[in-house]
Image (cartoon, rainbow, N blue to C red; front, side, top):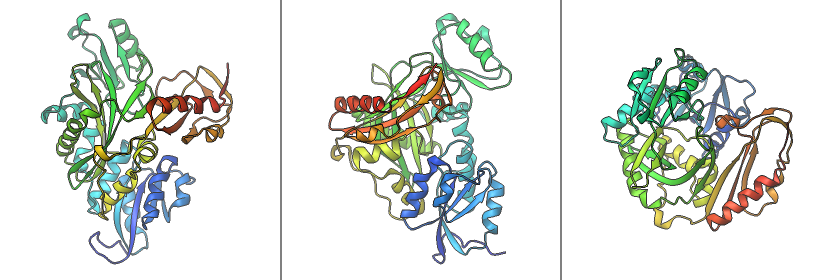
Length: 410
């Protein structure tokens, strides 16, 4: 059996492994190809759209990291695995960490992955490393109601592990809590209750290279009204840019706490009226919402995905420019949601006629059911625009949404 050369061997074809080959992985795969790597895509779907851009493919669930490792060893190819990355989340991160250890690729320890998927473990690590975060009131499968008083509300209810804001609710009283527990089948799914921190939500986007965190940009976030927290808009520049140095410092503390060597790092914060900065969650991934692949390049010309690949593969990472020298373009990423009904029609090419439009996508098929969003997966589509000022960008985003001519049949 012929195997790959070790990573530090300079002979052979340079390979890059993409854990996942779905639609969202395509920017990562294409960027790796652009940098001269031969890409091996891994996906359980034999018709995954990203496979078209891959040199080799492995049909396997991204959850099965042992099987993927064995199949990589069995490939009859002499080459050097230079990098392993994913643009997905959860189990994909765990698989990436497992393979990165096997092939001596800088990432984060496999043993630390559960701390990113389990919000209780994550919060504990924050606290152990003096990172300000919202306090967990209870966690587990069974609620101890006697430990909750009416004066303790509001609270945030969320699954212990999850994504896309699925199952996240604001709880104002015991009636809300009982209804939420019934809806999420108490006793089957582990949950956490944490204190609600009132303030502005912001997202921090950065890259860890050789254990040093580089903050790239900050975005302001708008969500649906309580009790849900569905993302509706991201925009930059943020009105909280004066916190850049403080966020940079927190990002460095997170990278040390989780022992990250090299990885993208996305953090979600709440900024209170008193300017306190609460870290809600952090993930060693690119994140969704079209921020690193659309917003950052459009706003400041920085190739976030490309530089993350260079950091991972050791091929000349370039840090982001200082905030004082960043492009001052304003960019808005705006999501479209609707009422309950059937998506009857839309014009996906409409935003192309809007001056300043940089991206748009419809997530739902014509004829599919849509509803008022309960989580991020219920959204209908997205547009992204750029302009000289924030006000202009907001106006252009509204025009781009209107140009989609979305019609929902009730």
